[in-house]
Length: 78
Image 1 (cartoon, rainbow, N blue to C red):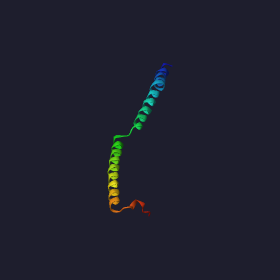
Image 2 (image 1 turned 45 degrees about the horizontal axis):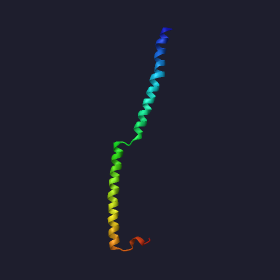
Image 3 (image 1 turned 90 degrees about the horizontal axis):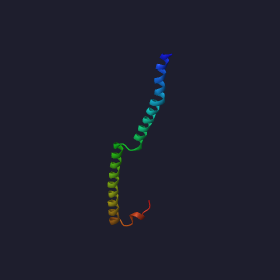
Image 4 (image 1 turned 45 degrees about the vertical axis):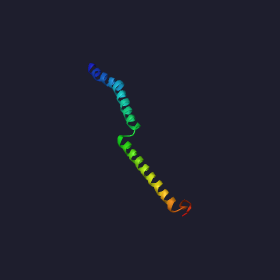
């Protein structure tokens, strides 16, 4: 009987205390990872934002050139 208690008590302690804490901490850390963007994602977003700014400036310049050289180009329907 005492041999069974030696095995039973650690199993109960593990299932009641260790396993729930382990699961809670595991899913808490998983959730924390998913909340924010990674550094790589942030770098990509920053690079895309810079590219958008450059392209926007180019579009504005092209529109200014077309406005100057070809009056009414905006009203021309294709």
